[in-house]
Image (cartoon, rainbow, N blue to C red):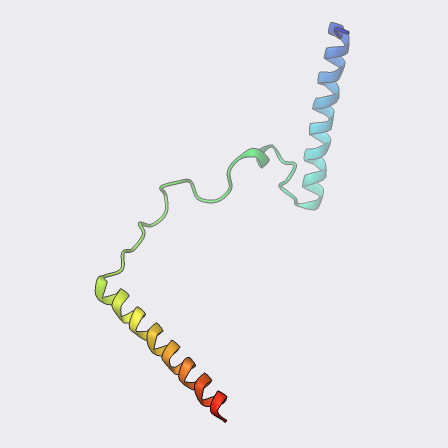
Length: 84
């Protein structure tokens, strides 16, 4: 069944009414979900943020050493608790 031009016009009219009502509803509740901008990407545009910082090898080594020390203390306490 092929829709008539009149039924297509009416369908278009109904869609516009629905979109207008959704916008009005979103305005009432402060929700941007049904606003015209709902399809746009949120947040900062790509490439507008600060450049990622690189950590030096010395900094990575210090962090790794601290992590190994934490694990050593954890395992030492675990062994001590197992003996008791």
